[in-house]
Amino acid sequence: MSRALLTLVQWLSPAFPTGAFAYSHGLEWAIAEGEVQDAAGVEQWVADILRFGSGRTDAILLAHALKGHDLEALSDLARALAPSAERLRETEEQGAAFAATTAALTGRALPPRPLPVAIGQAAAALGRPVTEVLELTLHAFAANLVSAAVRFVPLGQTEGQAILSSLHPLIEEIARESAEAPIEAIGSAAVRGDLAAMRHETQQVRIFKT
Amino acid sequence: MNALTPPRDCLERSQGHAQVTLARVLGAVRLRDLAQRGSAKAFLPRVDGPVPEIVFLNTSGGLTGGDRLSYRLEVGEGCRAVATTQTAERAYAAGRGVAQVRVAHEVGAGGWLDWLPQETILFEDSALDRRTEIVLGPGAGCLMVESVVLGRAAMGETLSRLAFRDLRQITRGGRPVLVEPLALDDRALAAAAGAAVLGGLRALATLALVGPGAEDALGPARAVLDEPGVEAAASAFDGKLLVRMLALDGWPLRRQVARVLGVLRGRALPRVWQD
Image (cartoon, rainbow over all chains, first blue to last red; front, side):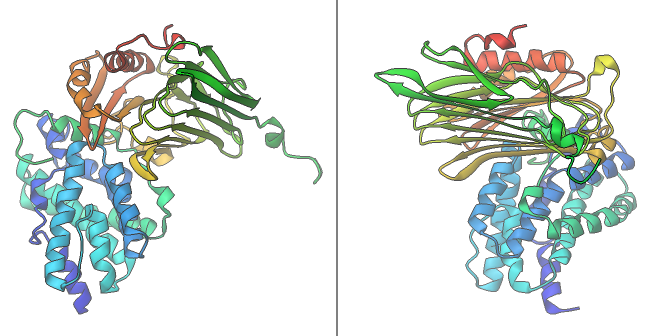
Protein backbone atom coordinates (compact mmCIF):
# COMPACT_ATOMS: atom_id res chain seq x y z
CA MET A 1 0.00 0.00 0.00
CA SER A 2 1.33 3.42 -0.85
CA ARG A 3 1.94 5.98 1.83
CA ALA A 4 -0.48 8.40 0.14
CA LEU A 5 -3.25 5.81 0.35
CA LEU A 6 -2.47 5.21 4.03
CA THR A 7 -2.77 8.96 4.62
CA LEU A 8 -6.13 9.05 2.84
CA VAL A 9 -7.44 6.11 4.86
CA GLN A 10 -6.34 7.88 8.04
CA TRP A 11 -8.09 11.13 7.06
CA LEU A 12 -11.32 9.32 6.25
CA SER A 13 -11.35 6.97 9.22
CA PRO A 14 -13.96 7.34 11.99
CA ALA A 15 -11.11 8.18 14.39
CA PHE A 16 -10.21 11.34 12.45
CA PRO A 17 -11.49 14.24 14.60
CA THR A 18 -14.22 15.74 12.42
CA GLY A 19 -16.90 14.84 14.96
CA ALA A 20 -18.78 12.85 12.32
CA PHE A 21 -20.39 10.58 14.92
CA ALA A 22 -22.55 13.50 16.10
CA TYR A 23 -24.32 13.95 12.75
CA SER A 24 -27.12 11.70 11.47
CA HIS A 25 -28.05 13.74 8.36
CA GLY A 26 -31.75 13.59 9.33
CA LEU A 27 -31.73 9.82 9.90
CA GLU A 28 -32.40 10.31 13.63
CA TRP A 29 -35.76 11.90 12.79
CA ALA A 30 -36.68 9.05 10.44
CA ILE A 31 -35.81 6.47 13.10
CA ALA A 32 -37.65 8.36 15.87
CA GLU A 33 -40.75 8.55 13.66
CA GLY A 34 -40.61 4.82 12.95
CA GLU A 35 -40.02 5.38 9.23
CA VAL A 36 -36.76 3.50 9.50
CA GLN A 37 -36.99 0.68 11.99
CA ASP A 38 -34.92 -2.29 10.85
CA ALA A 39 -31.84 -3.27 8.87
CA ALA A 40 -33.72 -3.27 5.54
CA GLY A 41 -35.07 0.22 6.24
CA VAL A 42 -31.62 1.53 7.15
CA GLU A 43 -30.07 0.07 4.00
CA GLN A 44 -32.79 1.61 1.83
CA TRP A 45 -32.51 5.01 3.49
CA VAL A 46 -28.72 5.17 3.23
CA ALA A 47 -28.72 3.83 -0.35
CA ASP A 48 -31.24 6.50 -1.41
CA ILE A 49 -29.28 9.29 0.29
CA LEU A 50 -26.14 8.06 -1.50
CA ARG A 51 -27.72 7.71 -4.94
CA PHE A 52 -30.34 10.47 -5.00
CA GLY A 53 -29.12 12.88 -2.35
CA SER A 54 -25.97 14.35 -0.84
CA GLY A 55 -23.85 11.22 -1.40
CA ARG A 56 -23.74 11.78 -5.13
CA THR A 57 -23.90 15.59 -4.86
CA ASP A 58 -20.93 15.75 -2.51
CA ALA A 59 -19.03 13.22 -4.64
CA ILE A 60 -19.33 15.52 -7.67
CA LEU A 61 -18.24 18.56 -5.60
CA LEU A 62 -15.30 16.57 -4.21
CA ALA A 63 -14.22 15.38 -7.66
CA HIS A 64 -14.12 18.97 -8.89
CA ALA A 65 -12.14 20.12 -5.86
CA LEU A 66 -9.66 17.27 -6.39
CA LYS A 67 -9.17 18.25 -10.00
CA GLY A 68 -8.25 21.79 -9.02
CA HIS A 69 -11.41 23.67 -9.94
CA ASP A 70 -12.09 27.02 -8.23
CA LEU A 71 -12.32 26.12 -4.52
CA GLU A 72 -14.06 29.37 -3.55
CA ALA A 73 -16.79 28.82 -6.15
CA LEU A 74 -17.19 25.18 -5.11
CA SER A 75 -17.46 26.22 -1.44
CA ASP A 76 -20.15 28.79 -2.29
CA LEU A 77 -22.03 26.17 -4.29
CA ALA A 78 -21.77 23.59 -1.49
CA ARG A 79 -23.21 26.11 0.99
CA ALA A 80 -25.99 27.17 -1.39
CA LEU A 81 -26.94 23.51 -1.92
CA ALA A 82 -27.41 22.87 1.82
CA PRO A 83 -31.12 22.12 2.21
CA SER A 84 -31.47 23.18 5.86
CA ALA A 85 -29.74 25.02 8.70
CA GLU A 86 -28.52 21.80 10.31
CA ARG A 87 -27.26 20.32 7.07
CA LEU A 88 -25.28 23.50 6.41
CA ARG A 89 -23.81 23.21 9.90
CA GLU A 90 -23.02 19.52 9.30
CA THR A 91 -20.95 20.18 6.20
CA GLU A 92 -19.32 23.40 7.50
CA GLU A 93 -18.36 22.16 10.98
CA GLN A 94 -16.98 18.86 9.74
CA GLY A 95 -15.23 20.60 6.86
CA ALA A 96 -13.61 23.13 9.21
CA ALA A 97 -12.41 20.37 11.56
CA PHE A 98 -11.12 18.31 8.63
CA ALA A 99 -9.24 21.30 7.18
CA ALA A 100 -7.75 22.27 10.55
CA THR A 101 -6.49 18.77 11.31
CA THR A 102 -5.07 18.09 7.84
CA ALA A 103 -3.44 21.55 7.89
CA ALA A 104 -1.78 20.73 11.22
CA LEU A 105 -0.55 17.36 9.89
CA THR A 106 0.73 18.58 6.53
CA GLY A 107 1.88 22.10 7.38
CA ARG A 108 -0.18 23.39 4.45
CA ALA A 109 -2.51 26.39 4.62
CA LEU A 110 -5.94 24.77 4.32
CA PRO A 111 -8.77 27.19 5.13
CA PRO A 112 -12.13 25.92 6.45
CA ARG A 113 -14.50 24.80 3.68
CA PRO A 114 -17.64 22.67 3.38
CA LEU A 115 -16.63 19.03 3.92
CA PRO A 116 -16.43 17.69 0.33
CA VAL A 117 -14.42 20.73 -0.77
CA ALA A 118 -12.18 20.50 2.30
CA ILE A 119 -11.46 16.84 1.53
CA GLY A 120 -10.73 17.64 -2.12
CA GLN A 121 -8.50 20.56 -1.19
CA ALA A 122 -6.38 18.44 1.15
CA ALA A 123 -6.43 15.19 -0.84
CA ALA A 124 -5.43 16.77 -4.17
CA ALA A 125 -1.81 16.73 -2.97
CA LEU A 126 -1.91 12.97 -2.40
CA GLY A 127 -2.16 12.20 -6.11
CA ARG A 128 -4.52 9.26 -5.67
CA PRO A 129 -7.08 8.42 -8.39
CA VAL A 130 -10.28 10.49 -8.16
CA THR A 131 -12.49 7.40 -8.09
CA GLU A 132 -10.57 5.99 -5.13
CA VAL A 133 -10.94 9.19 -3.09
CA LEU A 134 -14.66 9.26 -3.89
CA GLU A 135 -15.11 5.60 -2.93
CA LEU A 136 -13.38 6.05 0.41
CA THR A 137 -15.29 9.27 1.15
CA LEU A 138 -18.68 7.77 0.22
CA HIS A 139 -17.79 4.73 2.29
CA ALA A 140 -16.94 6.89 5.31
CA PHE A 141 -20.24 8.78 4.91
CA ALA A 142 -22.26 5.56 4.60
CA ALA A 143 -20.40 3.96 7.52
CA ASN A 144 -21.19 6.97 9.69
CA LEU A 145 -24.92 6.82 8.91
CA VAL A 146 -25.00 3.06 9.48
CA SER A 147 -23.15 3.54 12.76
CA ALA A 148 -25.76 6.12 13.83
CA ALA A 149 -28.48 3.58 13.01
CA VAL A 150 -26.71 0.77 14.87
CA ARG A 151 -26.71 2.96 17.98
CA PHE A 152 -30.20 4.42 17.62
CA VAL A 153 -32.49 1.80 15.96
CA PRO A 154 -30.66 -0.19 17.47
CA LEU A 155 -29.14 -2.91 15.31
CA GLY A 156 -26.53 -5.56 16.03
CA GLN A 157 -22.95 -4.68 15.12
CA THR A 158 -22.78 -7.49 12.55
CA GLU A 159 -26.09 -6.42 11.06
CA GLY A 160 -24.66 -2.94 10.61
CA GLN A 161 -21.54 -4.25 8.91
CA ALA A 162 -23.69 -6.41 6.61
CA ILE A 163 -25.60 -3.28 5.50
CA LEU A 164 -22.34 -1.51 4.76
CA SER A 165 -21.01 -4.48 2.77
CA SER A 166 -24.15 -4.60 0.66
CA LEU A 167 -23.75 -0.87 -0.15
CA HIS A 168 -20.30 -1.41 -1.68
CA PRO A 169 -21.47 -1.96 -5.27
CA LEU A 170 -23.56 1.24 -5.10
CA ILE A 171 -20.61 3.17 -3.65
CA GLU A 172 -18.41 1.95 -6.52
CA GLU A 173 -21.03 2.92 -9.08
CA ILE A 174 -21.61 6.43 -7.70
CA ALA A 175 -17.87 7.06 -7.39
CA ARG A 176 -17.30 5.96 -10.99
CA GLU A 177 -20.11 8.17 -12.33
CA SER A 178 -19.28 11.19 -10.17
CA ALA A 179 -15.58 11.16 -11.02
CA GLU A 180 -16.40 12.23 -14.59
CA ALA A 181 -19.69 14.09 -14.07
CA PRO A 182 -19.84 17.82 -14.87
CA ILE A 183 -20.98 20.17 -12.11
CA GLU A 184 -24.33 20.56 -13.93
CA ALA A 185 -24.99 16.86 -13.27
CA ILE A 186 -25.65 17.65 -9.59
CA GLY A 187 -29.28 16.86 -8.92
CA SER A 188 -31.31 15.52 -6.05
CA ALA A 189 -34.45 13.45 -5.60
CA ALA A 190 -33.96 12.80 -1.87
CA VAL A 191 -36.74 15.23 -1.04
CA ARG A 192 -37.91 13.50 2.12
CA GLY A 193 -34.31 13.15 3.28
CA ASP A 194 -34.11 16.95 3.14
CA LEU A 195 -37.49 17.23 4.84
CA ALA A 196 -36.25 14.90 7.61
CA ALA A 197 -33.22 17.14 8.15
CA MET A 198 -35.56 20.14 8.52
CA ARG A 199 -37.92 18.30 10.86
CA HIS A 200 -34.97 17.23 13.02
CA GLU A 201 -34.62 20.89 14.04
CA THR A 202 -37.89 20.76 15.97
CA GLN A 203 -37.55 17.17 17.25
CA GLN A 204 -38.17 17.13 21.01
CA VAL A 205 -35.47 14.68 22.10
CA ARG A 206 -32.27 14.65 20.08
CA ILE A 207 -29.02 12.75 20.49
CA PHE A 208 -27.48 13.85 17.19
CA LYS A 209 -26.71 17.38 16.01
CA THR A 210 -28.47 16.71 12.70
CA MET B 1 -39.94 10.95 -45.97
CA ASN B 2 -36.79 12.05 -47.80
CA ALA B 3 -33.71 13.73 -46.42
CA LEU B 4 -35.11 17.20 -47.03
CA THR B 5 -38.28 16.70 -45.01
CA PRO B 6 -37.82 17.76 -41.42
CA PRO B 7 -38.94 15.14 -38.90
CA ARG B 8 -42.42 15.66 -37.51
CA ASP B 9 -41.09 16.57 -34.08
CA CYS B 10 -39.30 19.58 -35.50
CA LEU B 11 -42.41 20.91 -37.16
CA GLU B 12 -44.44 20.72 -33.99
CA ARG B 13 -41.95 22.47 -31.77
CA SER B 14 -43.16 25.62 -30.13
CA GLN B 15 -40.93 28.49 -29.19
CA GLY B 16 -41.67 31.46 -27.04
CA HIS B 17 -39.99 34.28 -25.20
CA ALA B 18 -41.62 36.94 -23.06
CA GLN B 19 -39.76 39.73 -21.37
CA VAL B 20 -40.92 42.55 -19.13
CA THR B 21 -38.90 45.42 -17.72
CA LEU B 22 -40.17 47.54 -14.86
CA ALA B 23 -38.50 50.72 -13.70
CA ARG B 24 -39.14 53.46 -11.22
CA VAL B 25 -40.12 56.67 -12.96
CA LEU B 26 -40.93 59.79 -10.91
CA GLY B 27 -41.51 57.70 -7.80
CA ALA B 28 -43.83 55.16 -9.40
CA VAL B 29 -43.16 51.73 -10.86
CA ARG B 30 -43.74 51.81 -14.62
CA LEU B 31 -43.58 49.36 -17.49
CA ARG B 32 -40.49 50.27 -19.50
CA ASP B 33 -40.36 47.42 -21.94
CA LEU B 34 -42.48 44.49 -23.03
CA ALA B 35 -41.30 42.02 -25.66
CA GLN B 36 -43.03 38.80 -26.57
CA ARG B 37 -42.79 36.35 -29.40
CA GLY B 38 -44.01 32.90 -30.27
CA SER B 39 -45.98 31.01 -27.66
CA ALA B 40 -44.95 33.15 -24.69
CA LYS B 41 -47.04 36.08 -23.54
CA ALA B 42 -46.95 38.46 -20.61
CA PHE B 43 -49.99 40.28 -19.25
CA LEU B 44 -49.94 43.14 -16.83
CA PRO B 45 -53.38 43.18 -15.23
CA ARG B 46 -52.27 45.52 -12.47
CA VAL B 47 -49.34 47.59 -13.53
CA ASP B 48 -50.45 50.90 -12.05
CA GLY B 49 -50.70 49.93 -8.38
CA PRO B 50 -47.76 50.25 -5.99
CA VAL B 51 -46.90 46.60 -6.66
CA PRO B 52 -47.40 45.63 -10.32
CA GLU B 53 -48.53 42.13 -11.15
CA ILE B 54 -47.19 40.32 -14.21
CA VAL B 55 -48.75 37.14 -15.54
CA PHE B 56 -46.77 34.94 -17.93
CA LEU B 57 -48.53 32.49 -20.21
CA ASN B 58 -47.49 29.69 -22.52
CA THR B 59 -50.15 29.75 -25.25
CA SER B 60 -49.03 26.42 -26.73
CA GLY B 61 -51.06 24.67 -24.02
CA GLY B 62 -48.22 22.55 -22.71
CA LEU B 63 -44.65 21.48 -23.22
CA THR B 64 -43.36 18.64 -25.32
CA GLY B 65 -40.01 17.49 -26.69
CA GLY B 66 -38.02 20.23 -28.38
CA ASP B 67 -40.14 23.13 -27.11
CA ARG B 68 -38.29 26.24 -26.04
CA LEU B 69 -39.89 28.65 -23.61
CA SER B 70 -38.38 31.56 -21.73
CA TYR B 71 -39.69 34.19 -19.36
CA ARG B 72 -37.75 37.17 -18.14
CA LEU B 73 -38.67 39.94 -15.76
CA GLU B 74 -36.38 42.80 -14.87
CA VAL B 75 -37.43 44.61 -11.74
CA GLY B 76 -35.62 47.92 -11.57
CA GLU B 77 -33.88 49.50 -8.61
CA GLY B 78 -36.19 50.02 -5.67
CA CYS B 79 -39.19 48.44 -7.46
CA ARG B 80 -41.45 45.73 -6.11
CA ALA B 81 -43.33 43.30 -8.36
CA VAL B 82 -45.33 40.10 -8.25
CA ALA B 83 -45.10 37.66 -11.14
CA THR B 84 -46.99 34.45 -11.72
CA THR B 85 -48.23 32.19 -14.52
CA GLN B 86 -51.74 32.12 -15.93
CA THR B 87 -52.27 28.39 -15.48
CA ALA B 88 -50.49 25.27 -14.35
CA GLU B 89 -47.75 24.30 -16.84
CA ARG B 90 -48.11 20.81 -18.29
CA ALA B 91 -45.25 18.71 -19.60
CA TYR B 92 -46.61 16.02 -21.94
CA ALA B 93 -44.99 12.93 -23.40
CA ALA B 94 -41.92 14.36 -25.07
CA GLY B 95 -41.53 12.20 -28.15
CA ARG B 96 -38.02 13.03 -29.26
CA GLY B 97 -36.01 15.70 -27.53
CA VAL B 98 -36.40 17.62 -24.32
CA ALA B 99 -38.53 20.67 -23.59
CA GLN B 100 -36.37 23.52 -22.38
CA VAL B 101 -37.66 26.27 -20.12
CA ARG B 102 -35.54 29.18 -18.97
CA VAL B 103 -36.77 31.63 -16.38
CA ALA B 104 -34.33 34.44 -15.73
CA HIS B 105 -35.46 37.27 -13.46
CA GLU B 106 -33.40 40.14 -12.16
CA VAL B 107 -34.12 42.38 -9.21
CA GLY B 108 -32.29 45.70 -8.93
CA ALA B 109 -30.80 47.18 -5.76
CA GLY B 110 -33.31 47.38 -2.92
CA GLY B 111 -36.03 45.81 -5.08
CA TRP B 112 -38.27 42.86 -4.39
CA LEU B 113 -39.86 40.13 -6.50
CA ASP B 114 -42.48 37.56 -5.61
CA TRP B 115 -42.09 34.81 -8.24
CA LEU B 116 -45.16 32.65 -7.75
CA PRO B 117 -45.67 30.42 -10.79
CA GLN B 118 -48.52 27.93 -10.62
CA GLU B 119 -47.67 24.25 -10.39
CA THR B 120 -46.00 22.15 -13.08
CA ILE B 121 -47.79 18.91 -13.89
CA LEU B 122 -45.62 16.16 -15.35
CA PHE B 123 -47.08 13.42 -17.50
CA GLU B 124 -45.69 9.97 -18.30
CA ASP B 125 -42.72 10.12 -20.70
CA SER B 126 -42.31 13.86 -20.35
CA ALA B 127 -38.83 15.35 -20.68
CA LEU B 128 -38.40 18.82 -19.25
CA ASP B 129 -35.24 20.73 -18.48
CA ARG B 130 -36.05 23.92 -16.60
CA ARG B 131 -33.72 26.48 -15.08
CA THR B 132 -35.10 29.24 -12.92
CA GLU B 133 -32.59 31.88 -11.94
CA ILE B 134 -33.27 35.00 -9.90
CA VAL B 135 -30.40 37.47 -9.75
CA LEU B 136 -30.58 39.84 -6.80
CA GLY B 137 -28.92 43.24 -6.58
CA PRO B 138 -27.58 44.71 -3.32
CA GLY B 139 -30.28 44.80 -0.64
CA ALA B 140 -32.79 43.16 -2.99
CA GLY B 141 -34.88 40.14 -2.06
CA CYS B 142 -37.32 37.63 -3.44
CA LEU B 143 -39.95 35.09 -2.58
CA MET B 144 -40.03 32.07 -4.87
CA VAL B 145 -42.26 29.03 -4.92
CA GLU B 146 -42.12 26.00 -7.21
CA SER B 147 -44.69 23.20 -7.11
CA VAL B 148 -44.45 19.99 -9.09
CA VAL B 149 -47.13 17.32 -9.46
CA LEU B 150 -46.27 13.88 -10.85
CA GLY B 151 -49.31 12.85 -12.86
CA ARG B 152 -52.86 13.33 -11.68
CA ALA B 153 -53.77 11.15 -8.69
CA ALA B 154 -57.49 11.56 -9.39
CA MET B 155 -56.93 9.93 -12.78
CA GLY B 156 -54.98 7.07 -11.17
CA GLU B 157 -51.79 8.05 -12.96
CA THR B 158 -48.50 6.73 -11.65
CA LEU B 159 -45.41 7.81 -13.54
CA SER B 160 -42.58 5.45 -14.33
CA ARG B 161 -40.81 7.23 -17.19
CA LEU B 162 -39.65 10.78 -16.76
CA ALA B 163 -36.70 13.04 -17.51
CA PHE B 164 -37.17 16.10 -15.32
CA ARG B 165 -34.47 18.48 -14.26
CA ASP B 166 -35.56 21.57 -12.42
CA LEU B 167 -32.78 23.84 -11.25
CA ARG B 168 -33.81 26.69 -8.97
CA GLN B 169 -31.08 29.20 -8.31
CA ILE B 170 -30.91 32.53 -6.54
CA THR B 171 -27.68 34.52 -6.80
CA ARG B 172 -26.38 37.79 -5.42
CA GLY B 173 -23.24 39.56 -6.57
CA GLY B 174 -22.35 36.60 -8.80
CA ARG B 175 -22.46 34.15 -5.88
CA PRO B 176 -25.12 31.50 -5.37
CA VAL B 177 -27.36 32.07 -2.36
CA LEU B 178 -29.65 29.12 -2.97
CA VAL B 179 -29.31 26.22 -5.38
CA GLU B 180 -31.92 23.50 -5.50
CA PRO B 181 -31.39 21.04 -8.36
CA LEU B 182 -34.40 18.74 -8.38
CA ALA B 183 -33.79 15.76 -10.66
CA LEU B 184 -36.41 13.09 -11.24
CA ASP B 185 -35.75 10.34 -13.74
CA ASP B 186 -36.84 6.72 -14.24
CA ARG B 187 -34.49 5.50 -11.53
CA ALA B 188 -35.74 8.03 -9.00
CA LEU B 189 -39.35 7.15 -9.85
CA ALA B 190 -38.60 3.46 -9.35
CA ALA B 191 -37.25 4.36 -5.89
CA ALA B 192 -39.92 7.00 -5.18
CA ALA B 193 -41.60 4.92 -2.49
CA GLY B 194 -38.43 5.12 -0.38
CA ALA B 195 -38.76 7.13 2.83
CA ALA B 196 -35.79 9.34 1.87
CA VAL B 197 -37.06 9.92 -1.69
CA LEU B 198 -40.76 10.78 -2.00
CA GLY B 199 -42.31 8.23 0.37
CA GLY B 200 -44.86 7.47 -2.34
CA LEU B 201 -46.07 11.08 -2.43
CA ARG B 202 -46.36 12.83 -5.79
CA ALA B 203 -46.82 16.52 -5.21
CA LEU B 204 -43.92 18.57 -3.91
CA ALA B 205 -43.18 22.21 -3.40
CA THR B 206 -40.30 24.36 -2.28
CA LEU B 207 -40.70 27.91 -1.11
CA ALA B 208 -37.73 30.18 -0.62
CA LEU B 209 -37.60 33.62 0.92
CA VAL B 210 -34.30 35.43 0.45
CA GLY B 211 -33.53 38.92 1.63
CA PRO B 212 -33.69 41.25 4.61
CA GLY B 213 -35.73 39.71 7.45
CA ALA B 214 -36.08 36.31 5.78
CA GLU B 215 -34.94 34.34 8.82
CA ASP B 216 -37.43 36.17 11.07
CA ALA B 217 -40.26 34.58 9.09
CA LEU B 218 -39.41 31.08 10.36
CA GLY B 219 -41.83 31.19 13.32
CA PRO B 220 -44.85 32.50 11.39
CA ALA B 221 -44.19 30.03 8.53
CA ARG B 222 -43.90 27.04 10.87
CA ALA B 223 -47.12 28.04 12.61
CA VAL B 224 -49.20 27.39 9.46
CA LEU B 225 -47.54 24.13 8.36
CA ASP B 226 -50.43 21.96 9.50
CA GLU B 227 -52.55 21.47 6.40
CA PRO B 228 -54.17 17.99 6.53
CA GLY B 229 -52.55 15.57 4.08
CA VAL B 230 -49.37 17.61 3.77
CA GLU B 231 -45.90 16.92 5.15
CA ALA B 232 -44.08 20.19 5.61
CA ALA B 233 -41.10 21.69 7.39
CA ALA B 234 -39.16 24.93 7.41
CA SER B 235 -35.63 26.03 8.14
CA ALA B 236 -33.97 29.44 8.28
CA PHE B 237 -30.27 30.05 7.77
CA ASP B 238 -27.77 32.21 5.91
CA GLY B 239 -30.28 35.01 5.23
CA LYS B 240 -32.97 32.75 3.82
CA LEU B 241 -36.06 30.82 4.77
CA LEU B 242 -36.79 27.49 3.08
CA VAL B 243 -40.08 25.62 3.30
CA ARG B 244 -40.56 22.14 1.83
CA MET B 245 -43.98 20.60 1.36
CA LEU B 246 -45.09 17.17 0.13
CA ALA B 247 -48.53 15.69 -0.45
CA LEU B 248 -50.25 12.85 -2.23
CA ASP B 249 -51.88 15.18 -4.71
CA GLY B 250 -51.77 18.74 -5.97
CA TRP B 251 -54.83 20.05 -4.15
CA PRO B 252 -53.79 19.84 -0.48
CA LEU B 253 -50.34 21.01 -1.53
CA ARG B 254 -51.82 24.08 -3.18
CA ARG B 255 -53.83 24.90 -0.06
CA GLN B 256 -50.69 24.61 2.07
CA VAL B 257 -48.62 26.72 -0.31
CA ALA B 258 -51.35 29.39 -0.36
CA ARG B 259 -51.45 29.50 3.45
CA VAL B 260 -47.67 29.92 3.75
CA LEU B 261 -47.72 32.61 1.08
CA GLY B 262 -50.57 34.28 2.93
CA VAL B 263 -48.64 34.53 6.18
CA LEU B 264 -45.39 35.58 4.49
CA ARG B 265 -46.92 38.17 2.17
CA GLY B 266 -49.77 39.49 4.31
CA ARG B 267 -51.85 40.24 1.25
CA ALA B 268 -54.11 38.44 -1.21
CA LEU B 269 -52.62 36.05 -3.75
CA PRO B 270 -52.60 37.01 -7.42
CA ARG B 271 -56.08 36.57 -8.89
CA VAL B 272 -55.01 33.65 -11.10
CA TRP B 273 -54.28 31.71 -7.89
CA GLN B 274 -57.77 32.20 -6.54
CA ASP B 275 -59.91 29.56 -8.23
